[in-house]
Image 1 (cartoon, one colour):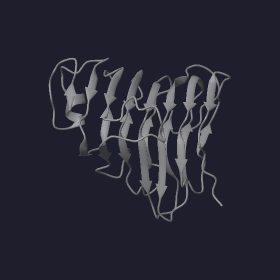
Image 2 (cartoon, one colour):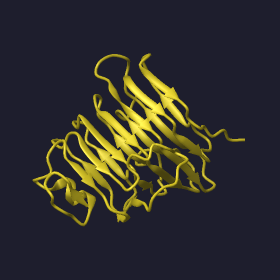
Image 3 (tube, helix red, strand yellow):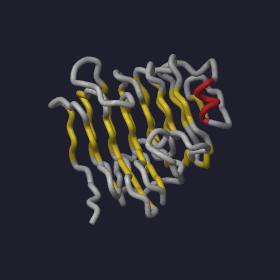
Length: 219
């Protein structure tokens, strides 16, 4: 893992994030390989851009390069974004969730802030489960629904592949709990999402645009 601003290299993504010389707005480039870790983006690390080998692919059906796979090392989100973080970018990874026991810990990406800009791009997001209960891929906003009004979340969820496998039900793709505006959900592909919703948005405004997504419809 290389911080392209400081020039430092690291063996894990979390070590790169935590380093004192990794500052807000820095870019981390992650090489192909498997990273068994649950990542936390803490407060004070705003605007980090974390790029995998498929950053900038911009085609959910495109041919992917050898992946940087971030695999949950514990029954917790693969990536947790602190509620105080103002913005972040996750671009071009393979993200593999745990076989989550329930919907409390079952989110591959969880950004709980009420005013966070989330840019989630060009990822292959995978979950295999044979357990009952809701399995969430992306959860934006707090743990309970928030009424319309300021603050709001915004950003882009584009060109991702959401893949579900196993006999379990309750796979939920994108859940946005917070008042949202200036948000694009574009050209994503959903495969095998049984029992829940591909996209669920509470309190959207007219500036939330959902377009050109390939949605999975269960029998």
